[in-house]
Amino acid sequence: MVYQGTAVPLGVTMSELNGDISFTQPQLREALEKVRPRLATVDPTELIPINVNPVDAATTVCGALPAILNFRSSIRTHLNTFELDHLDGLEPLAMALIQSHSLFVGAKAPPTELTNVLSEITPLRERFLTDVNGLKTRGCLNVCNLTSLRGSPGHRRIATDVLTLTNILRNNWEGVSSKCGVTEAELNRAEFLADRLFRLVSRRAQAPARLAEAALERQKIYTLLVHSYGQVRKAVSYLRWEHEDAEKFAPSFFKSRKAGKRKKASAVARPSAGHETATTAAPATATAKPFNEQADPFLNSH
Image (tube, rainbow, N blue to C red; front, side):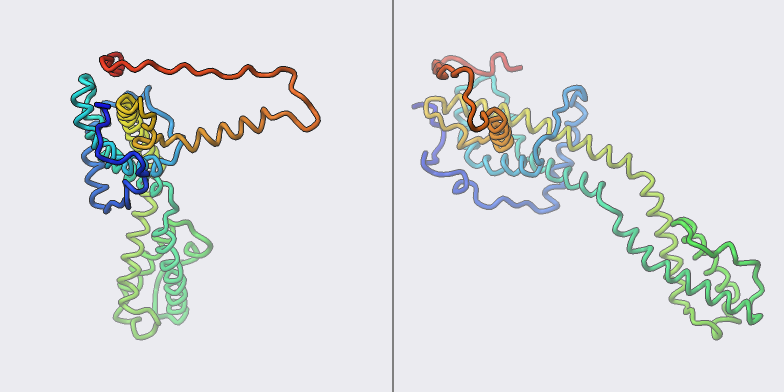
């Protein structure tokens, strides 16, 4: 068969072909930056819903690439209208999808740093307040009423309170440093944490917009990958038609999902015990697609 197009033995499995699939974080970031200019060309009305795990889809594509690339010369020779950019751009798209998915998940993740800052700054606020109240009671500080600093404040209020207490202590440091348990290192740390808390709270307010942006970027990359990989699978299927083994070289990443749906549909359709079906389904027949070496499956695909 002139379209064999690969040096891989027919009995070799995809797992034997692929080996380990791994990328470094810089590679993933670089792939995303490379792909981003293409996202402006994606029509928002043609976005494909993400109904499989994006990382699973991307790794399926990356795993299949070593075998698929062996078909490149045959595709170029026998499928004149095939756009090789679909094949050559698969790996960057797959890697960009992994990176964009990680950014999307990160945008959804709880603000761990906010929790850590709060766990450190809240006790500092309480210690500062206790010391300032004690110094005021002993006449070491002449400050206004501090009742506004009591209670359970919100995040911004905590940061404001800490800065207020820090300034009170700093402005009177020479007279109170030896009479309280607060150290200058704690004052420095408190100022840093208060500033950090302000920034984190402001960033959290922008989280919904960042999440929507990350979701849209991920869906655009997924759409491009599904389209390009679909074109590549069509080419491989054409070249391997007589061998009927195209799925081994370019497997669908929707396969497991479809199998699950078929299993569920079969369970729903199965008659209950003790009941017979009213009709008997006619045996299914399949007509083999004629193979035409002159036909180009991409002539009407654009």
